[in-house]
Amino acid sequence: MSSLTEQYSWTSPPLVVGAPMRIIALPPLAVEVSAAGGLGFIGAGNNLDELDGWLEQAAGLVSKHAALKAYHEKTGMLPIGFGYFNWAPDEDLEKAMAAVKKWKPLAVWQFGAHKNGDYATWTEKIRQVSEGRTEVWVQVGSVADAVEVAKMAKPDVLVVQGTDAGGHGLESGAGLITLLPEIADALHSAGMPEIKLIAAGGVIEGRAAAAALTLGADGICLGTRLLASEEATVAEAYRKEVVRASDGGANTARTKLYDQLRGTTQWPANYNGRGILNQSYYDNSSGMSFEDNKKLYEEAMKQGDAGWGINGRITAYAGTGVGLVKSVMKAGDIVREVQQQARQRLQTTPS
Ligand SMILES: Cc1cc2nc3c(=O)[nH]c(=O)nc-3n(C[C@H](O)[C@H](O)[C@H](O)COP(=O)(O)O)c2cc1C
Image (cartoon, rainbow, N blue to C red; front, top):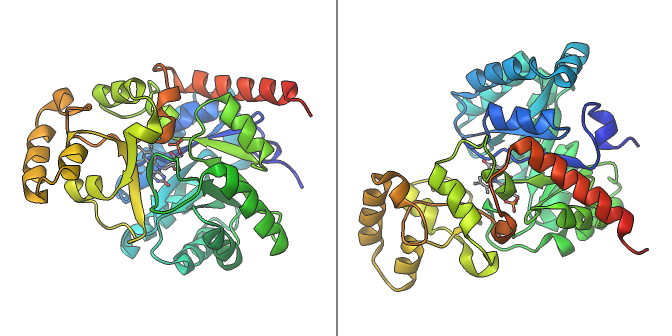
């Protein structure tokens, strides 16, 4: 069975994947991750009206990098992927299918379905419109979901999301250190060892990447770390907040509060999101009514950079790994640094 870096011939080991963070991971970030020898994803989420334009932009950027251009010309496949939320209305998901047909991305990343059968339905469509060429990835957060999705949808890749992850995920979950090997074992027992696993959640640098590979991952995914990249489409104050925050177990939380304030409540009931604690969170914890909290949130939204931070109220989704993010870097340098650190760690780990 060939490794993912053998399958994606422009990539180098270990495979570093750029998470499809909605409207943050846009073509500049996704293509930079791929250009550095990783695999970048555009985060379309439920903004599927904009996907066609993003893929057009990505195709233009791909043509500026020799290795990516060569792969694209040789295979006809765009050496990036995109991710969407399966809870988006069907007519929007059909727009994603049209984009797969037109742009031929290497992979589509599905997430946030109300029921696992929905992944199977859309997997079939992706395979149909791409004539089986676009790979299907699904992000899951429990052993039960991993096995059910594997059986129902037979994806090429499962992204195993541990509870340290920034942004949305299951309300109750486990960290990668237990989740990943249990899912690997369960897939073996279920006769599906060929499904590749990508580790997501708390992987910020090479030590965690090496650990995840040791646990059985075929590659690792960076979300929070890439928020502090030059190419992420985020407010400057968001980037600063990710670099400022430390001790993520204490200073981030999984909560539905941020979704309620933002009005993004379409997520399945058993999902919430991990973000850095801010004044909205503290006020909610000390008993402020939601209505008062929401009013203050709306005011903060008008304050630009001043609305962010520990005394601010604008949501900064990020994972428990924030304390390991020390500076803003170019996305390509982040990918290369994590790969190099992981390789070094794996060589020096006592057997
Ligand atoms: C700001 C932010 C936005 C995210 N948006 C998405 C998304 O749109 N779709 C998705 O599948 N995952 C999303 N995620 C989750 C990532 O796919 C991934 O599971 C997570 O970032 C990995 O953990 P880490 O943040 O510790 O690297 C998001 C994560 C963050 C931090």
